[in-house]
Image (tube, rainbow, N blue to C red):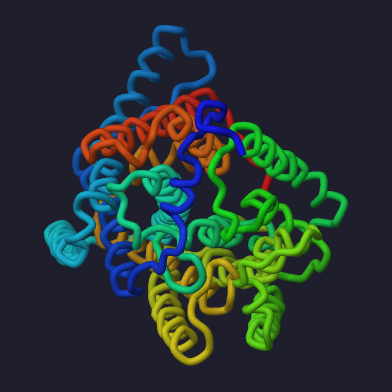
Length: 464
């Protein structure tokens, strides 16, 4: 073993212990926390509409002076959104975490006030309802992605509550929903959900090659700089990128219409849960590992079946909530989706409580059935709050949402790089709360600026 003087990360063991053996928090706290964070985004958009903030789009023949002015508008809008959205979110996840219940009540009262004060007989046309639904889908996807980006760095500081970090075996922590939310956010609006593409195995392997390369690159990076790795999360070598690639490849093997994907998805999830209860769960949660590749990466390999089932269920769900005839764009209206998404969200919460108490507790490590339902419940909860947009005239999504929506995976990759740089450049466990808060805000601001610049120049990174 390297001595501290010969390693890039002398506190690796301490950092690994810092995120190990955690049990999470209550589902009620997560419910209220997710509600609060969703309403922060909603209120910012309401405020934007009242101030008539817009970003004009210039044609391709604008001169350099105008381009420079546009870039200034981009950066200004990002700065304002960071102050109005990102900074309050970071506060709720850190120094205000002990006031989650109070925060939720306060935000609910504020949202109710804005809706009642500005509605006054306002009605939404069919065209506006379709546009509103598109806007809310984008806002939801960005919200879940950006929340994950903040948490992957925040968890390394003591200012971030341990109950929000990933659980070791069973339980629910805020960070447990990260990878599941990424899959849900992509499956709901995937080409399969829209019914406009059938991917074969060859195309799937080709499109996921970048993910596989990123997976191996992460292995190389973590081993070469002695970076902390929580083995109980995915295994010794497995990681998030391999899981995404695996889900894409499995989905390509069985091409079904979106209306039948959910049936197959639930079948996979139920069969997988039965196998878990027959003894696979004990194997996956055991710290004992053999020398073969499967045993070394058992959590990552077997949990793919849970994530695959989740993906298929969301394909059908997205088709039902958002899309109409195969090959068309978004046809549903926000009003059509709002009622249904609230009902489905409530049903998934009730199902989660039943499964957690009477079948098997929630476990992200295995991606069991209860984990799938709680991920669905939380994601639909965020979207449900955002569907309240129709009650506010002139609702306009924040500029930050528009920028991030074009590069969700690219933003996540940059977040991982920045997180690694911060961890290798300082001892995150010894910094003061003020310094940790400043680092998190600066980190989020860099991510936001990068997204705005990429949007301005039309750069888009997408391969899943």
